[in-house]
Amino acid sequence: MNSLTWRAGGLLALILFFSYITAANFVPKDERQQSEFWPDNVMRLGLDLQGGIHWVVGVEIKEAVQHELEFLRDGLLESMNTKNIEVESIVVEVGQLKIVGVEPEYSQGVRDAVSEVGSLVAVSDAQELEVYQLTDDWNQEIRERTMAQVLEVLRRRIDDPVRGIPDSVVTRQGEDRVLVQIPGGQIDRGRARNLLKSTGFLEFKIVLDRAETEALLRALYPDGIAEDHEISLERDPETEEVVAAYLLRKAPDITGDYLDDARLSWDQQQRPLVSFRFNPEGGRIFGNLTEENIGNQLAIILDESVYSAPVIRSRISTNGQIEGRYTVQQAADLAVVLRAGALSVPVVIEEERSVGPALGQDSIVSGTRASVAGLALVLFFSTLYYRLSGVYASLALLFNLVCLVGVMSLFEATLTLPGIAGLVLTVGMAVDANVIIFERIREELRAGKTVRTAVAIGYQKATWTVLDANITTLITALILFEFGTGPIKGFAVTLSVGILTSVFAALVVTRTAFMLYPGGRSVPQLSI
Image (tube, rainbow, N blue to C red):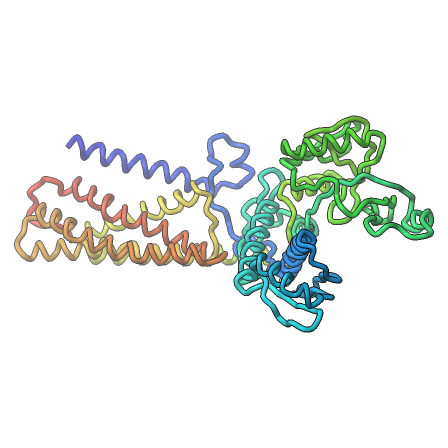
């Protein structure tokens, strides 16, 4: 009796706990945040339930191939110079690397240098011209590497813990696309688009010369600027008017690859700026750079546009600031982009849809009605057919639903429209385990067993059948979660949690009910 008391008490405590967690989902967000009584853990609503932005983002894989070919070209040039192999030039065009002006005596040396690279295959071998492209295996390697990097950067930008967008979805779709879903009105569409499309390539360059406009700066160099120099413009973020033109070297003095962190900060006049911190190696490089250029301007460049060009007053090592003419939101978004890192290739929004909150609310209402109707029918028929045992099954079903919503709330799972379908399916399937057990008990009663023995044997023999049936369904749900996207994942999550809570309710909750009554009593018959 003592163990039964602990068992029943534990189940009661579990019911009360999950009821408390479940109830929090029905409390308005503002009231929940203001009250210390309600927990913060609630289910999130997916895009199809609360509305929002749906984007399919295309990744420019061709740019990654071009970058790889340019990298290989630089390696080939260095290798050929070391081996004194003379060619006219090595040119990278669309998907191809061309070695121009190959003299016959150097042909074998060129082929040997290319073979050392290991990732190029010959396309043509004309006189004084050799054309190569990446092998199929290496093309695939670049695609996978680029997609993984783009996914990681976009996730960090969208899900940034400081200024990110909660409840958003960033996942791969197909070979070269990324699905982005931002639920609710949590972010301005233009701001979200900028977060996505900004390449985020940060460079620091010492300013060689400056003028108010590009024309004035070019006028200072009538013979033209050197090939290894370039002109970059600083624009007003509001009006897009040119504020200043800077003459810079093409090669950066240091890049954002060395950044450790970036945060929104304020200057003494309470104007927004971005504070950044380099890692130890970056701090060493940046410290030497600033120490050697005290009194000069340092251009801070993001995606080929100058954000600011402050004068270096003293040596700066690991910490620095980016000042500019931007708002608090623009400074915060810049910090997000810098923290997330640079995209190796550009991305393009190929598909854009908006889901209205009214449609989502209709889905919630319809899903709730379907769940309640299904629950009522199952409770009615199970009680009508199995009588007192059906009441036990009904109580287990209610416990199952409370646990299901509670567990999803604890892990802040996202509820989607297919997730509601999974909830309704769980209601329909939850009684199956009890049906198997009850029918097994009936068979034992017909065979002349006592009520107590029939119940014990029924649970003993039906347990593996129940587990076998639900484990196969659980495996399917896990596969859906692993390989599915968006709504499919929502369905898989609800189904997986529902299976676990259903099995627990059938094997533990109803068994405890039978242990309470009839328990050890010698009753002549069982209401089943």
